[in-house]
Length: 177
Image (cartoon, rainbow, N blue to C red; front, side, top):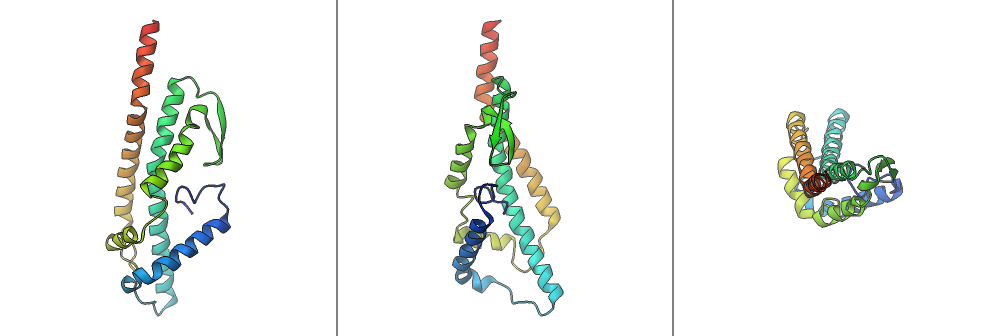
């Protein structure tokens, strides 16, 4: 639901549910040996389901934070180009964004597909299970630390992506003065 590409507002819930069902059916035989037994008590079952939903939301949120670096770069470029006042409807976040960010929208989708962040692979999902074992509630403090580190790196990446435009704008303004 949060993963970029499939969790966007313009993707219908039916498509998201079908993708989740197909993904679960494909991964079940591959990961069945690593899955824990079904708990005996309803309390343990709900705790396990809550932990798994937390891990899934966390992975989707990390992917969305990483792609926000393109949003940061687009905002900086729009500010430097004096296009920040003009805005257009942005279907990916359901609101308005600066005109300078709009060219980054196809790049965002392309980056997701090229990085395979939106299409988890069975081998990648199996590797994640080593760090986030199924059936155990994840360490929320470790997840928070990783999320803060990824957000800082994503912001840094956004500034670095906009740096050539910032340098060009500075030189342009200096030449005109």
